[in-house]
Image (cartoon, rainbow, N blue to C red):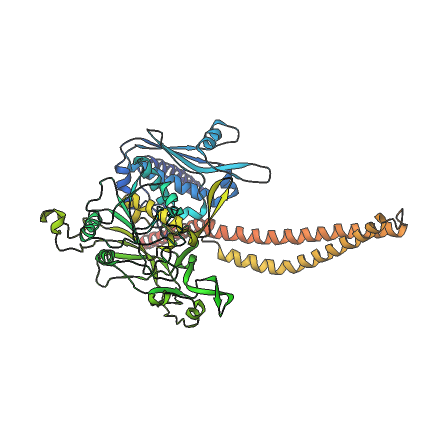
Amino acid sequence: MHTFLVRFTSAGIAVLLAAILFIAVNVIANVWFSGIRLDATENGIYTTSNQVASIFENIEEPITVRLYFSQRIAEVSPRHGLYYQRTKDILSQYSEMSGGLLRIEIYDPEPFTDVEDRAVGFGLQAVPLNELGETGYFGLAATNSTDDQEIIPFFNLEREQFLEYDLAKLIFNLSNPDLPKVGLISSLPVEGGVAPQMQPMGQMNGRGSAPWVVVDQIREFFEVESLPPGINQIPEDISILLLVQPTDLSHLAQYTIDQFVLRGGKVLAFVDPNVESVGPVGQMQSGDLSGIRRLMESWGVKLSSSVVGDRESAMRVNTGQNGRPMISDYVAWMEIRESGIDPDDVITGDLNQLNFGTAGALEKVEGASSVVTPLVLTSPNSMRIPAAKFVGLSDVVGLFRDFVPQNQPESLAVRVSGMASSAFESAPAESGADAIDHISQSLGPIQVIIVSDTDFLTDRFWTEVTSFLGQQLALPRADNASFVVNALENLSGSPALSSLRARSIKSRPFEFIQDIRRQAELQYRESEERLNARLDELEADLQQVQTRQSDGQSALLTEGDKKIVENYRGEILKTRRELRNVQRALREDIESVESLVTFLNIGAVPVVFGLVITASAIVRQQRRRISASKVLMQ
């Protein structure tokens, strides 16, 4: 008995000491190791990318980020709760990188409070949580010392994979508040008027065309400055060049653009082997693209002289055959859907449809050191068609009939990064630059985005312009303008932003539970359907009796009718009760299985661990007794 009490007391003291040690370790870890994190997720979604460190290390003024999150949202949508935790964790890491210049404030905007009023004042979006009208917030508002403001009205789950990019871009904009300037070089009348070498399609009496809608949308986010095609110097305040069919580039202009890119300047280029937006209908217009082709090849990309057709993505157009109107698939006009758009790039991740017209094909130059990443691809059901076929084209059906798929996709838009070499061995004499000023190799990874179509930008390919109350409204049919603005925004940031990719958030449900749920539903749905059908039949019969009374066939219900009504009502109540029992049984079966699986995944681990420890302790004790017995016997 005394031995038992001693062992019992020793075990109790051991358990108490273990509990104290457990609490002490957690307290010490929280104090000493709070800055240490271990991200065991598959894609490292809780770990900030190393590339973005430069953005926060270069912040020169305090920036305050206010994160608003209603706790009720986490109760209604647990996934939003996890999204909030990830957002808060990333912001905390950004704050540490900035050395405290990035201040994080977190608020729970309860209804009818000053905090909610402040969230509304910032322009955050309230979302309904239930049918009672209760609302919640999950948004962000950030300001700098000069009261510039950036907001995320609501963190949509569809945008979760781009969370790190969105947060870094927002903070970068506040630390660099001046509106970015874009230099535009174009041979097409994108800003209205008359193109230098081509007349706008549909022009009458020599009058110029209106600016393209896409340019108006660009001007909402950027300052645009037109540059001449013979440019010999790019202003220092221009960090991005927008090239739209830059034909007849002079030798000096080519060199100027070449050195601009190698020194870290960014380029968004639209080049086209067959321009349909200007010139007489049925005549191929491309201009002299030899200059831009030379530059593109030095960047590692080659543009085909052929037009790409895609039978799977072909637009349905009105055409004619033998003088009769008809509708046909025009393989050279393509509606590229989500399957052909890169979902992991921040430029294209949110886009659903892009429209192209007689676009070319882009391919990587063999042996190029740069990295060429497709952003938009045709389907494998595509082919290259000689551009000459589109001169005076009238047989759209013939193109479809003679189509022979090449069984491989073609790139319509690409992102170019990595190191690149100059297209020139030395500086041209007319540049006035010394040999020492010439850059033969890029100073860092270049940032260039190329699209093989200029009709992509024209109004008719992506929008409908209507007049409403005296104002012109653009109603987009495709995401072409969003692609352009996204690309310019991406290029206007630091190289760190352009290097960020999406981090997919994978759902990992309990597949075993889902299988059990499906089996249970199959078991109970048959009974449920039978009871529902019987319920509908009884209610129809009851309605028939009541309708006969309301039609005046009988001022009062007969005793027989009253009994029929009572029987119907009683059977209806009984059927509804059976239906509720079936539905409750289904729910209880599923919940019991979920509870069991949850216990096995969570609770069983410490139980098994405890059993293993207990068993090992018993084995060790037995060995000690055996050893002690052997000693005594000796």
